Length: 204
Picture (tube, one colour):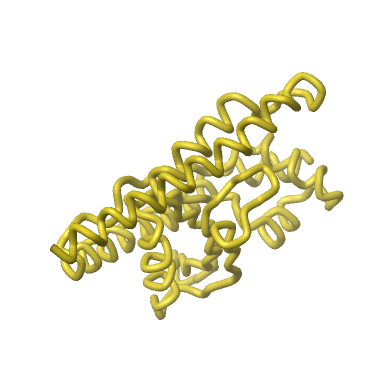
């Protein structure tokens, strides 16, 4: 565990993850500019990023019953670094995900579609795990970054779910979670209604 903590808190390691995030955020701005020009409207509403704390990495490795080492963390965890991309409409999610997958210098490691197949909690989003090449002193290593793409409505639900349920015990939060799952369906319907309205306006 001490090896993991020492390595993850090494400035060079943190900067490598930060660099990979910077590269992807710049790429997402280019994708947004291209799609916005094609659609004649803004596609991406906002972006946010984060690097997991060492404590969060340790907890996840323990939860997954894996060795608590630096090597295991960087080789098996896909979300040490993450970017959240929020768009206005639910159909834009797939446009953005497809654009990410067309980037020839990124290796697509995995894709999870929680829009077509939401989690039991009601969570919806597309996760695309990419490998970003980071070169320094003639050495290139691949940094994994998880890109979450979701609509504004999906992000609103996810944020509320985190605020109200995260780290609460199962007994005290069970009823709240049940209601939040119901609200996920309500928000999804609103999301689809707004998409229908936008399409009607575009036909005018």
